[in-house]
Structure formats: structure tokens, C-alpha cells
Length: 236
Image 1 (cartoon, rainbow, N blue to C red):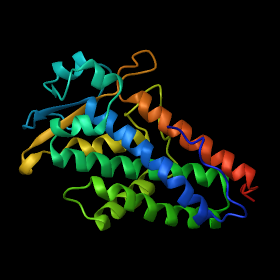
Image 2 (cartoon, rainbow, N blue to C red):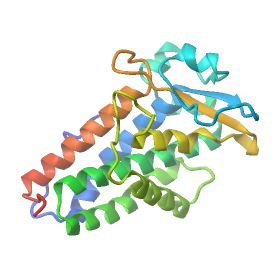
Image 3 (cartoon, rainbow, N blue to C red):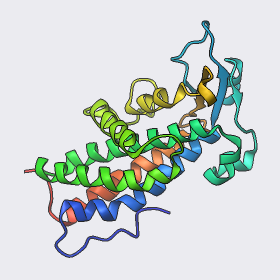
Image 4 (tube, rainbow, N blue to C red):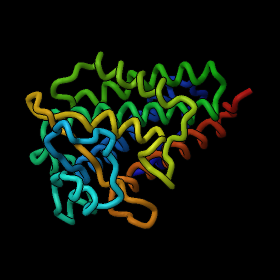
């Protein structure tokens, strides 16, 4: 489900837009989180492990590095569904993934808004969106408070400011997407020293989490630009 159902209200303000925008963004958060979980691998961390190894172009490379895939079920990889994946994944990993993706897509939305709106409207939109998204994502969190989630989302916004959001030539290396992957890679159940990594894929290797991330960013950018253009909210 895309953003086509979003329509400008009569005489909206940025808070109205954030309220209308949040349900669609929550769907994208769920899509990206499901894709990251489906294409994740896990290994026990030791002194020889390289914590920076979080993004792999394909499954063989990830497995050669010592990671065990969460699933190899082709149906689950082609169309990841978070409810089908939930029984397979550690609850702590799911929580961290949802919180991280919420922070990532919130930060990306603010970056796009900053390109399209005046600073005053960006400030109102981002503050309102922070609350709406936080409330929506809270249902997926098992051990993280909404206050901690808000702090993480604000941290993502600060960390991603002015960065390339997603570098399709080198995804997950030095872009904002890399911040997301590193944020959710080092978690484990019960405090165990586990490390996660992800099959990202590429433009040529489409079996990975990159397509879901690319779609989410593309639809987010398109919606914000269309809405602000329709309301004549351009930067001045």
C-alpha cells in the first residue's frame, strides 16, 4: 500500500500534514523492518569478530562470514511479513529493528521536508510527526519505552542531517542507511553477545533488503514533495 490515499486537507497546517502522513509512514516502517528481519543473519560475537561487517551483497557472502540466516524460505524473502517472521526472531532484535527503522525513516522524512518547506514549517512538522510515529511504533516494542524511542528517533535525525540517505552504489557503507544497520546489528537475547548482519543486495542483486528501503524512501520523498507543492509550502 502506497501513499496514494493521502490527500491534502482544506487549509492544512504542518501538524495536519504530519497526522495524515504518519499512517502511511508506519506502513513503510513495517515493510522495511520485515525486510531487514527476513534478510538478517546472526552469529555469536567474539574477539575476532568485526562489528563493522553488517552489510553483505548476497547470502553466500554473509554465510561465509559466519552468520546463520534467519530464514531461507523463498516465499518469506520475496514478500516478507512481520507477523510470519515474528516467531523466528529474538524479541530484542525485533524491538531494536522497529525502533531503528522508525528513527531512520523519521530522519529521512525530516530531511526531505527540509528540502521542501520553510524552517518554521519543518520544525512544526517534525515535532508533530515524532509524536504520531512514536505512538504507532510503540505497539511493536517489547522492552523499550516510548521515551527511549523518542530519544532514538531524535538521535537519528541529528546523525543523518545533511547526509546521503541511501547510496545505491554502496548501500550501507557511508550513508544514513549505514547508521541504521549499525544501530541494530549488535543485539542479542538475554544480553548474549550476538551480532547481526544483513543481505542488502544491489541494483543487480535484488534479493535483499535494499528494494524495500529504496521504495520507502522514494514514496516518502514523492509524497512530501507533492503535498508541499500543492500547498505552496516551498522554502522562501
